[in-house]
Amino acid sequence: MPARKINGKWHVDVWIDLPGQGRRRLRRRSPHRTKRETEEFERQLVSDVLSTSTQSDETERRFHEFAVEFLTTYAMANNKHSEVVAKESILRVHLIPAFGEAWLEDIGPAAIERYKARKLAAGLSPKTVNNHLAVLRKALGIAVEWGHLPSAPKIKALKVPPPSFDFLDLEEADRLVDAADGEWATMIRAALATGLRMGELRALRWEDVDLRARHIHVRQAVACDLVGSPKSNRARQVALCGSVWGVFQQQRHLRGELVFCADDGRMLTVAECYTGLRRACRLAGLRRVGWHVLRTASPRTS
Image (tube, rainbow, N blue to C red; front, side, top):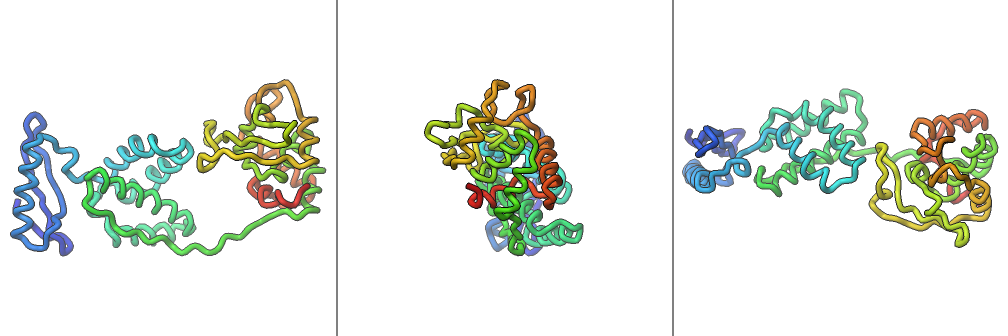
């Protein structure tokens, strides 16, 4: 097929017979500005493909095909489990339905802007849409690295208003701890005093608590029910202030290796953690807060 223009750009669109592989379509955008140069580019491209008898690295992919390869090859090898789960959800629920049948080269600025407009109109927040764009940007960037795409489009993030922060003052933090039931009081006090995330508290082991030196080694966290390294893969050491050091000594139990666990020694679920915290909030007469709010109050408790 002769070279042709699509949206003002010269393209190659030709069928070739590959030995042992059958008839395949080869579609690429030309890096040249003239028809004559594009025709020469096509001849060279066909020659290169036939000489190597491989088509996979040279042909353009549809987005849904590459998305699976990106997730199973790149994301699973380079991202934490929680990141893979998040990428899979964004691809499956949002990006593949929107771009799945499109050739990678056809996902340009205009198509991306239309996607942003549709998602905002559907009620998604700018921050959520930006999370989608980050996955799309990374996927198209990897497509360039792997030779499936000559260049990736520029993707402009949406402007996001400054986030609002909630925190507990000293009096509220004390009320919350006093209202908490049993070991929930210890877990809540630990969150307030150390700034550990809920996933880090759930995965905290006694071997990571040095009561003699009065500090905690934060070496692991749980996300999506899988224990792994803390956020950003960075272990750290957190000091135990006097009041928390004392309650940790009283907390010592023989139910298992975890500091905070269920009665049978198993790891607490996310639902159980939120139920315990919400009950404490209700008994303390406080608004409902999440475990992340306790991290912002940590410098206030001694």
